[in-house]
Amino acid sequence: MENMEVIENNTLNNQKTISIPKFAYAGFFLRLVAFTIDSIVAYSFSNIILKIFQISPDLTFMNIELNPFIETGICLLYFFILTYLNNGQTLGKMAVGIRVISLSDEKLSFFDCLVREVFARYIQNFIKILYLIVGFSPNKQSLADMLVDTVVIKDDVVDYLFEN
Image 1 (cartoon, rainbow, N blue to C red):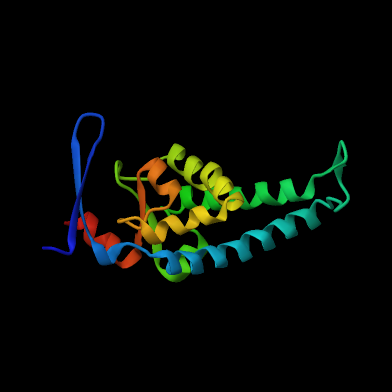
Image 2: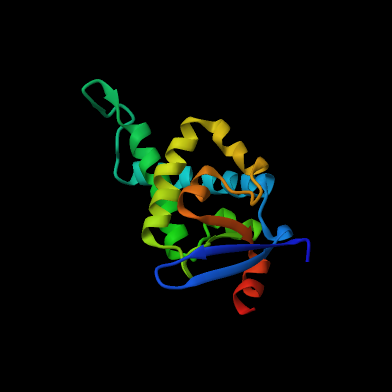
Protein backbone atom coordinates (compact mmCIF):
# COMPACT_ATOMS: atom_id res chain seq x y z
CA MET A 1 0.00 0.00 0.00
CA GLU A 2 2.57 2.54 -1.03
CA ASN A 3 -0.09 5.06 -2.10
CA MET A 4 -1.66 5.08 1.37
CA GLU A 5 -0.52 7.35 4.13
CA VAL A 6 -1.46 6.65 7.72
CA ILE A 7 -2.11 9.74 9.75
CA GLU A 8 -2.22 9.31 13.50
CA ASN A 9 -3.60 11.92 15.85
CA ASN A 10 -4.08 11.84 19.59
CA THR A 11 -7.45 13.10 20.73
CA LEU A 12 -8.29 13.64 24.40
CA ASN A 13 -8.43 10.02 25.54
CA ASN A 14 -8.11 7.90 22.45
CA GLN A 15 -6.03 7.62 19.34
CA LYS A 16 -7.56 8.09 15.92
CA THR A 17 -5.97 6.68 12.80
CA ILE A 18 -7.10 7.64 9.33
CA SER A 19 -5.67 6.04 6.20
CA ILE A 20 -5.87 8.57 3.41
CA PRO A 21 -4.84 7.58 -0.11
CA LYS A 22 -2.56 10.13 -1.77
CA PHE A 23 -5.03 10.66 -4.63
CA ALA A 24 -7.71 11.75 -2.13
CA TYR A 25 -6.13 15.12 -1.34
CA ALA A 26 -7.47 18.10 -3.25
CA GLY A 27 -4.59 19.84 -4.96
CA PHE A 28 -3.84 23.49 -5.58
CA PHE A 29 -5.74 23.95 -8.86
CA LEU A 30 -8.90 22.18 -7.71
CA ARG A 31 -8.91 24.33 -4.59
CA LEU A 32 -8.23 27.43 -6.69
CA VAL A 33 -11.32 26.76 -8.84
CA ALA A 34 -13.44 26.29 -5.70
CA PHE A 35 -12.00 29.48 -4.17
CA THR A 36 -12.72 31.44 -7.37
CA ILE A 37 -16.35 30.28 -7.40
CA ASP A 38 -16.68 31.08 -3.70
CA SER A 39 -15.13 34.52 -4.15
CA ILE A 40 -17.61 35.39 -6.90
CA VAL A 41 -20.54 34.19 -4.77
CA ALA A 42 -19.27 35.86 -1.56
CA TYR A 43 -18.56 39.24 -3.16
CA SER A 44 -21.90 39.15 -5.00
CA PHE A 45 -23.64 38.39 -1.71
CA SER A 46 -21.67 41.19 -0.07
CA ASN A 47 -22.74 43.69 -2.73
CA ILE A 48 -26.38 42.63 -2.36
CA ILE A 49 -26.17 43.17 1.42
CA LEU A 50 -24.58 46.59 0.92
CA LYS A 51 -27.39 47.56 -1.49
CA ILE A 52 -30.21 46.19 0.69
CA PHE A 53 -29.01 48.10 3.74
CA GLN A 54 -28.19 51.12 1.56
CA ILE A 55 -24.67 51.40 2.88
CA SER A 56 -23.07 54.29 1.07
CA PRO A 57 -19.82 53.66 -0.80
CA ASP A 58 -18.63 56.91 0.77
CA LEU A 59 -19.16 55.69 4.34
CA THR A 60 -16.10 56.63 6.37
CA PHE A 61 -14.91 56.63 9.94
CA MET A 62 -12.05 59.00 10.77
CA ASN A 63 -11.39 59.39 7.02
CA ILE A 64 -11.11 55.61 6.53
CA GLU A 65 -13.44 54.02 3.97
CA LEU A 66 -15.50 51.34 5.69
CA ASN A 67 -16.91 49.52 2.65
CA PRO A 68 -13.83 47.34 2.08
CA PHE A 69 -13.95 46.24 5.74
CA ILE A 70 -17.67 45.49 5.57
CA GLU A 71 -17.19 43.58 2.29
CA THR A 72 -14.31 41.55 3.71
CA GLY A 73 -16.28 40.81 6.89
CA ILE A 74 -19.28 39.53 4.92
CA CYS A 75 -17.04 37.37 2.71
CA LEU A 76 -15.22 35.86 5.70
CA LEU A 77 -18.59 35.13 7.33
CA TYR A 78 -19.70 33.39 4.13
CA PHE A 79 -16.68 31.06 4.24
CA PHE A 80 -16.99 30.46 7.99
CA ILE A 81 -20.75 29.85 8.16
CA LEU A 82 -20.94 27.57 5.12
CA THR A 83 -17.89 25.53 6.13
CA TYR A 84 -19.13 25.10 9.70
CA LEU A 85 -22.80 24.41 8.98
CA ASN A 86 -22.34 22.44 5.76
CA ASN A 87 -19.92 19.72 6.87
CA GLY A 88 -16.76 21.32 5.47
CA GLN A 89 -18.18 22.58 2.19
CA THR A 90 -18.89 25.96 0.64
CA LEU A 91 -20.73 26.39 -2.65
CA GLY A 92 -17.42 26.39 -4.54
CA LYS A 93 -16.22 23.24 -2.80
CA MET A 94 -19.55 21.55 -3.59
CA ALA A 95 -19.24 22.54 -7.25
CA VAL A 96 -15.81 20.90 -7.62
CA GLY A 97 -16.48 18.01 -5.23
CA ILE A 98 -14.13 18.69 -2.32
CA ARG A 99 -14.54 19.21 1.41
CA VAL A 100 -12.54 20.06 4.52
CA ILE A 101 -12.20 17.32 7.13
CA SER A 102 -10.60 17.34 10.54
CA LEU A 103 -7.77 14.92 11.24
CA SER A 104 -8.35 15.07 14.98
CA ASP A 105 -12.14 14.98 15.33
CA GLU A 106 -15.13 13.39 13.62
CA LYS A 107 -16.52 16.82 12.72
CA LEU A 108 -15.02 20.25 12.14
CA SER A 109 -15.27 22.24 15.35
CA PHE A 110 -16.43 25.84 15.66
CA PHE A 111 -12.87 26.79 16.60
CA ASP A 112 -11.35 24.95 13.61
CA CYS A 113 -13.67 26.75 11.22
CA LEU A 114 -13.13 30.11 12.90
CA VAL A 115 -9.34 29.87 12.72
CA ARG A 116 -9.25 28.30 9.25
CA GLU A 117 -11.91 30.36 7.50
CA VAL A 118 -11.58 33.73 9.22
CA PHE A 119 -8.17 34.39 10.74
CA ALA A 120 -5.96 32.29 8.45
CA ARG A 121 -7.91 33.21 5.29
CA TYR A 122 -7.62 36.90 6.21
CA ILE A 123 -3.85 36.58 6.59
CA GLN A 124 -3.47 34.52 3.40
CA ASN A 125 -5.43 37.12 1.43
CA PHE A 126 -2.86 39.74 2.42
CA ILE A 127 0.13 37.47 1.79
CA LYS A 128 -1.11 35.62 -1.30
CA ILE A 129 2.09 33.62 -1.74
CA LEU A 130 1.06 31.59 1.34
CA TYR A 131 -1.57 29.88 -0.83
CA LEU A 132 1.27 28.21 -2.76
CA ILE A 133 2.14 26.11 0.30
CA VAL A 134 -0.64 23.73 -0.84
CA GLY A 135 1.37 22.79 -3.92
CA PHE A 136 4.45 21.85 -1.92
CA SER A 137 3.17 20.28 1.31
CA PRO A 138 3.01 16.47 1.36
CA ASN A 139 -0.68 16.38 2.32
CA LYS A 140 -1.55 19.39 0.14
CA GLN A 141 -2.31 21.43 3.25
CA SER A 142 -2.48 25.20 3.39
CA LEU A 143 -1.15 27.22 6.31
CA ALA A 144 -4.71 27.26 7.68
CA ASP A 145 -4.97 23.47 7.41
CA MET A 146 -1.71 23.02 9.27
CA LEU A 147 -2.82 25.36 12.06
CA VAL A 148 -6.03 23.47 12.84
CA ASP A 149 -5.09 19.95 11.69
CA THR A 150 -7.40 19.67 8.69
CA VAL A 151 -7.06 18.51 5.09
CA VAL A 152 -9.12 19.12 1.98
CA ILE A 153 -10.07 15.92 0.22
CA LYS A 154 -12.07 14.93 -2.80
CA ASP A 155 -15.66 14.42 -1.76
CA ASP A 156 -16.08 11.00 -3.35
CA VAL A 157 -13.44 9.62 -0.98
CA VAL A 158 -15.11 10.88 2.22
CA ASP A 159 -17.64 8.05 2.43
CA TYR A 160 -14.93 5.47 1.88
CA LEU A 161 -12.73 6.91 4.64
CA PHE A 162 -15.40 7.04 7.30
CA GLU A 163 -17.08 3.73 6.48
CA ASN A 164 -13.86 1.68 6.68
